[in-house]
Length: 405
Image 1: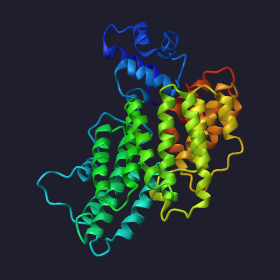
Image 2: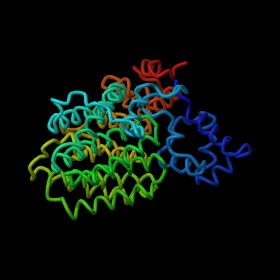
Image 3: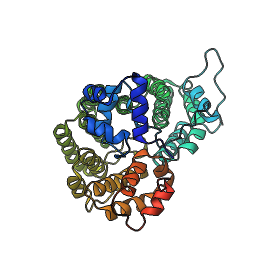
Image 4: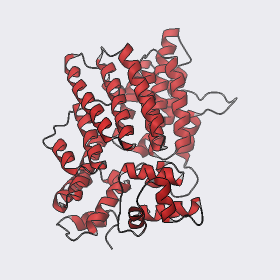
């Protein structure tokens, strides 16, 4: 079973300073002593993301330290597994060593590489991180080879593939809690994007960097980067569907950072602006390969608006936004699972245990591995199990997540 948030909070508080009191942490973080006590005494099993950001700031740690293991690969304290070592080697090739041979030189082409990248991003959005970790080192190495051969145009196309592969490596590293590897991958992705034939790639990667900043509790840096990149896209490429999607993804990212900083009104305005912009997508030719472009649609904006409403203690608003939502066919499975989790949290906040269990049961059906590793899912079930009512189906969920005693 995952470490309880309260245990993690107490451990980090005492590690910061042996005599660090709950009152001192409250003063440093701006979070009430009552909330800190309830968390550490396990009378409260979860906290809002803005609260967690404030606690992380007061503790002087990254947000990931409070969130615990991300839903990718749980930490065991052991050395990195061979698959992760291979990924590090692909992202950061050893100095003075010859580059690895491509998997199949005769079949290795830009169109094939783009198909492999699209498939790899699908695996990522399916949250099949173990399978992706096995495949990604070869994809990165092959893309690096393509970026080094052929005409200038072919090299530029290879650099675009390399940038996209390294961006994916950065995303996977973030999910696994490997911030150093994520930064290395994204730095190299930006370099490849600058030499590529894709004018939108650097902005897409900037969105990934902004997400990494969020995980590090660098919310102002994340907001400023997303806004800067969005403005750049608006000036240069907004007339295409690809441009609208990249721009919209950046606006959503900036809104999320603003919300986590506590400015919900600004975030809500930005989200409504983004949702209005989704109407333009139906008037433009679709992207050539949408799987390699930022996730942005009316569905994705609504899902993110639901999430922000839940995080800011507006469960009624969250459920109203989710009501009757029809998800577009290109909505990744990982976004669908987040929606179910947020709906469950909203029902829990309103005291509707049956509604929460219904959403959580559906979540277990569509993403059992993701749910088992997600700290928020465990926390919600823990809150329900400790509550006065235990509706039908809750025991199965509690036993599945190791919450039931």
